[in-house]
Amino acid sequence: MQTPLTQKPRHGFQTDDPLLEPIAEKVQRGERLTFEDGVTLYRSGDILAVGWMANLVRERLHGDLAYFNVNRHINPTNVCVASCRLCAFGRKKGDPDTYTMALEEAWETAGQGLTEAVTEFHIVGGLHPDLPFEYFMELVSGLKQRYPQVHIKAFTMVEVAFLAKRGKMTIEEALERMKAAGVDSCPGGGAEIFSDRVRHIICDHKIDGSEWLDTARLAHKAGLKSNATMLYGHIENDEDRVDHLLKLRAVQDETNGFQTFIPLSFHPDNTALGHLPKSTGMTDIRQIAVSRLMLDNFPHIKSYWQMVTPKMAQISLRFGADDIDGTVIEEKIYHDAGAETPQGMRRRDLERLITEAGRIPFERDTLYREVTRSEDSFTIAV
Ligand code: V47
Image (tube, rainbow, N blue to C red; front, top):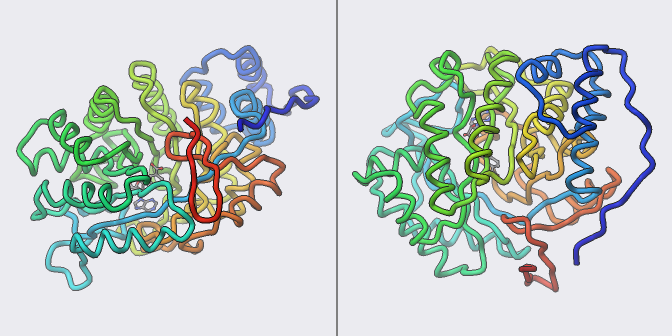
């Protein structure tokens, strides 16, 4: 059952910042914002006014609904050729604390999350120099065989491009092989920041921004939905952030293949950028609001509770976010980089966060269809 959207009396827009007034007029008329508007939103001192506008757009799209899912992360290997300065998870081949899951182990680990009837496996990992393309296809097809009801969201655009190269095939061929093996959609990682200047410093050895965007275009053309991320709170500036959002918006105008945008706050611990400070609540909340306002063609903005903490994710539901991600169960990438959040949460905890934010919890599958549960099984509305 689709919950009806609520209509509430709305107080008018008020701000101490005159630069926001023309932007608020555009937002109220449903007009597209410009690069300059984006920079103004990042620099405005009136965060409540920025949040008011983002909330207006969020409620226009989703009313009071707030989405979450029951998912499990699987990171098949931490061996990675890229050595990104931003990352605390990847290890060089031969380092003492590397791991690579045997296929049986990955299939079994996946099953350990089924106590709450997981609807999604989220699979991302290192760029392993030796694992063949077939390892990843077997991993996916084995999961599909064992858990046919579970949606497989696997491989960032960086992994897709790397695996195509490893398998000596075009990206189009790699995507077709992935689909045939059972990949249902792609996660949004690896986008980081598209600016070449910043990318050279934080993640020099992986595909550049335009290759990431081209690979996303091809994935959408192949019929796979995907997400998009942006890593913020390191050495990027406001212009880099707006540039990133506008590049995503332009691809979305062409393909309509992105479902959700997820801003990821940089966690510096144990990375080569460990001297940088952690992002603050104000930066996190502003990032959500500006993303909602600039990405007018993205259906969903996710405030990923693992990254920003459950408390901030909850508050974000009033600042533009409509999704807080899922149960996750076992997270490695941000916890290696110092995240202090729990590794997973139960459905009822996510529902409580949402309800206490005055929103209506809506359990979704990866494609945002409603999930209805009885005991430990579920059905998906189609
Ligand atoms: O691409 C790596 C980021 C991403 C750090 O699609 C870091 O629903 C912060 O793809 N501090 C991978 N971030 C995660 C990812 C993802 C996560 C949640 C939801 C979805 C989705 C996708 O993690 C990487 C990189 O941008 N990352 N290291 C770090 N130290």
